[in-house]
Image (cartoon, rainbow, N blue to C red; front, side):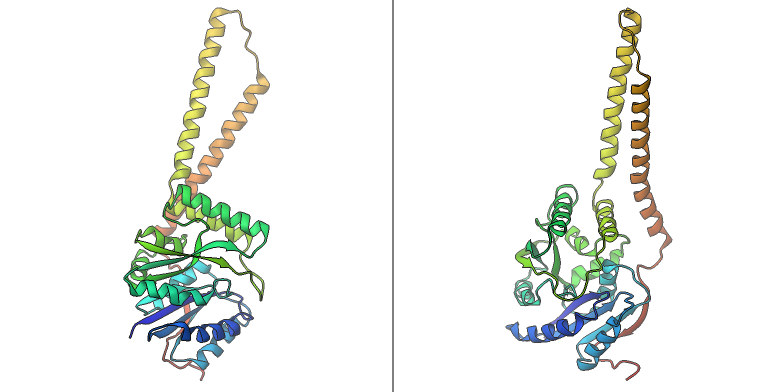
Length: 317
């Protein structure tokens, strides 16, 4: 009997978890074949009652729930990686705890897996969200598709199903400062795309802050694209060509003596522009070098405080 592991990172989700647990259990009846279910719930260092609510879920269904408590907040993608480390299913699903991605899509995704498709993507064709959220998301995914991962569907995705083989591949890679979901796409397996409309969040407040979005944007480009480095080279060649042409023009003017070359202000503006470009270029190169250093240190992506596997009883019970 095949097992499905549903990996759910949780961060300040105490209000969502009771509804999410109810919806997950109710969704089991939508599967047209016999499966066993494993819900890998990862508490990403929450400071509210998220872990308490997860323990309540675990106490109701101890045979189905694996509970992983991380020592501190390491971000949703590292929390997903922690869930992958502890998942044991034949296929795996990544699902958001806020229920913006509908669990009722999972049975359809599993049906493709049963046909031999190892990677199934639920693509956000539309979003029930505000203008700014849509703008950032659409811009981010458009740039990723154009300059980094060509096989990413327009609109991006968070809800994915993948075979245990892909899970083992990602765990083995153990990459830092990356998007684990897009790392699955980078493996380049053939996949099926299921479009859907992402629901708006009904309960709680999102902790997906602007600073986290910016970090994700930078991490994604550094992890999957060399475009920023190529852009530095292109701009450097362009500025060098302009400087060479201008230098030839000045020399010719001096020789001919019929054109007076002045421009202290223009020289200072040009100098400041080139200096600014150099600082930006150093910053971009520094992002790549820092990530290489971070990976070389070999520090773990996450530290686990407690684990209670499916079938085990919580220590305090």
